[in-house]
Image (cartoon, rainbow, N blue to C red; front, top):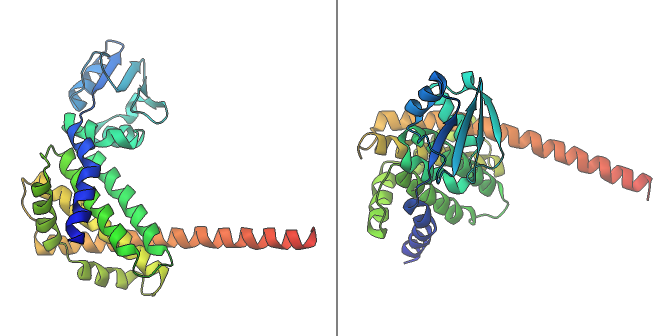
Length: 266
């Protein structure tokens, strides 16, 4: 019963994003560069109703609009191939990720990568918390939300029943224990580091398997390929946890210095 309630809460939270679609436009100087970007992204060429606007002026392009966190300026040479999708997606407000991907398939992979990274970081932080047993429900909810957002980005019509089916299919081939074995190769230490690495790697692996599932027309990822995905995720988790350690150490040193200053200058 608790699992069903948790699943419903996740479904309810993501339903709004799954129903919306953003409008992306490329406008500005009439040039071959503008035409190239329109053809590459599938953008409209009118500003009317556009929440995300890329304005071409000479050799520069400016990204603005309601869906943008901060106005961004690019050299047009940066906006080529899949790299253009990544640059634009990184400038988006979170609420516009899925709506953009739904309307413009060019951005789907970049949007999903951003969603996966965001959730992986969140689950690593949750795993590092010193509250034994409290991390798993939060991590599971984050992963469920991630799966539904990826499904919505690929234009999947979401209902509660469909959400249950997706979780069943994807969780069956995921293998949390297998992720744990991979993580143990790179982070063989108990405690917060191992829990953070497991949260990060598990979320990365599930997210990437979900993307492949939709890109391949609802075909499950094979066992050997899934093992490679887990191993890559575990390697990346080690790097992330190493950076967490460095930040913790730096904060600890700063706190020690502040305490020493306080004692010397009460």
